[in-house]
Length: 402
Length: 199
Image 1: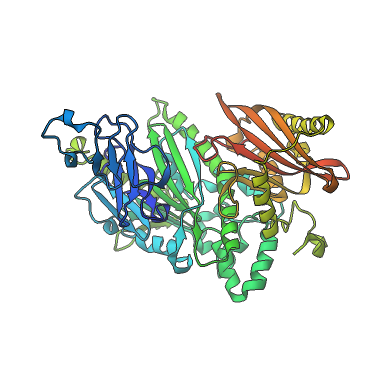
Image 2 (image 1 turned 135 degrees about the vertical axis):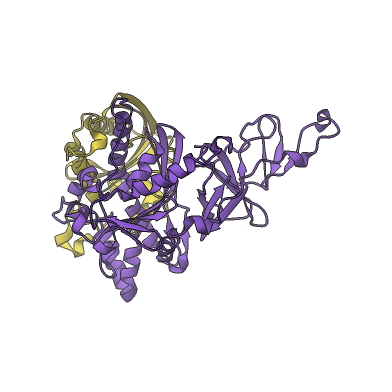
C-alpha cells in the first residue's frame, strides 16, 4: 500500500463532486483518509483527515460545504485550505507555539485532467499527463462522447465490498477471457426473449474477432469492444433492455429526428474498459474506484454519471442502464474474486497463470510507443501492469518512503 | 405512447412502455407521501394488508419467486433506492429499479443456476412489522408502510439488513396486487457485500 498508493498518481475524485466554493468530500489515498476541499477561491486541496493534535479525523461527513473543520476531540479548528485557525487556550503550549506550523498535512501534489482529480505523495513524480500517457486519447474519447465534454458525477454510487485483494478487480477489468463464463447468468438472462445482446460476442470465437486488449504502459490497460459495433445507434440497439426502453425510444425518435441515435447511444456505455493504474476504472458510463481496505478486503465504488446538453430523459435512461451490470454482472465477478482469494491461501500451490498469449507467434504486436496489443482474451494486460507493480515495489530504498 | 395504442406490446414482461415521464412523476410524489401522518385504518383493512405482506415475506424466504412475481400487478415497480428514503430515480441510480420486464429478468436470472453470487443460494428469514395502512377504497388503491428486519445466511456468513418497506397496492379482478414496492435499506448508500437477495 505504501509502495504503490504512496508513490504513484492515485485518482481521488471528479471535480463535479466538489461543485461550489467551500465544497468538500472525503476520499482515500491508499489507506490514508483525505478531505478534498475547494476553497473560497475555487482552488482544490487534498488534506490528510488527521488532526495535528491527537490524530482524530476532523471531518466525518462524506460530503457537503464547510469553510472550516473543527476536531470534535479538543476543538482544534482548520480552514478548508488546511491552515490551523483555532486552538482552545493556546497559552499552555508555550510562547514558541506557532499555529502556522500545525496546518493539516496535505497531499503535496494534486493535478486534474479534464475533471479527473489525481494526487500523489511523490514530490518527484512525473507530471500527471506523462503518467496518463496513452490513456489520454481514450479518456478524451470517453469524455467527448458527452456534448461539450460535460460529464458530471452527482447521481450516487453503488458501493460493493468483497473479501479479496484490490488487484483482483484490476486484473479482471481488462480480462476478456472471463465474460463468456463468469457472466453466463447475465448472458442467459439476456437471451430470455430470444435476442442476443451486449457482450454475447465475448463467447463467440473472441480471439478471431475484431476486439482487442492493450497494455498502454505505466500500469494502464484497455479493452476495446467498439469494433463489435457499427454506426450511430448501434450501441443502443445492442444493449440489454432497460425499464421504459421502447416508449422512450419512440419519444426520442419522434422529437429529435437526426439527433436521436446520438442521444440513444449516450444512454448506454462507451464500450471501452479503460483501466488507469492503480485505482480508476472507466467501464460503461461509470467511474469505478478501487479502495483497498485490507489485504483481503476491498471496496469497489461505481459512480453513476450524467451528461450536460441532453434532454433530461436521456440522463434518466442512463441511470436505468447503469443499474444493470452492478445488479446482474458484478456480483458474479466478486463471487469469483472471493473464491480466488480463498484459493490463493493454499500454501502448497503458489503460482497463478497469466501467460495466455505469451510467446505465441503472431499473437502480440508492440507499437513504436510501446503499446502492446493482442486478442481480447490475452493476459498481456496483467503481464504489463505487474511490470509497473514490480517497478514500484522494488525501488531502492522504497521502505523509507512515505 | 399508451399501452392501449399498441395492443401487440401489452405483454409487460416483454415490452416496456409504462415507465414514462408521468410514471416517474407519480413515483416521486408517492415517495414523499410515505412520510405523512396517516389516520388509523379499520382493523380488517390492516389485517388484510398484513396478510399480504406476510405472504410476500414467506414466498421470498422460501425462494418461491414465480409465485412472488404473481403478487405484482402487470405494470409494477420493485425499487431499492441507493439514496436513503428514495430520492429522484430520474437523476439518481438505484440498487434495483425493476419494471415488470426487469423483475421477470431478475427471477429468471436467479433461476439460471449460473448466478455464482447465489451459489450457494442465500437462506433468508425476515420479520415485517409496524404495519400502517392508508386506504383509498374509492380508487382501488392502498398504501402500506412497514419496518423489516432480514437475516441472510450465505457461504458461512450471516448478515442483517433492516429498513422499511413502502407498498402501493392496487386492486384488480383477483384482489390486491403490489404496484410499487419501495425498499429502503437503513444503509442503502454504504458498502454492501454480495447484495443479490430479493428484499
